[in-house]
Image (cartoon, rainbow, N blue to C red; front, side, top):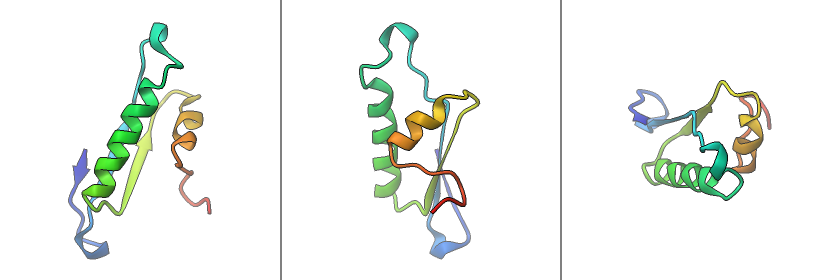
Length: 74
């Protein structure tokens, strides 16, 4: 989802939540492809940033593999 923003010159925010792959289809790159496509679209739409969230404890590994970092990290 892309949402409008009043700051940062009007550049939008992107939100990506709960990318899940069926257990029988994991580790084949499907989830990475979905995240990569969503990020590509967000950057093409000139988003200021993309917030990627999940309640699953191991989701951070997948998001970091896509170049994400925790808010406040350099």
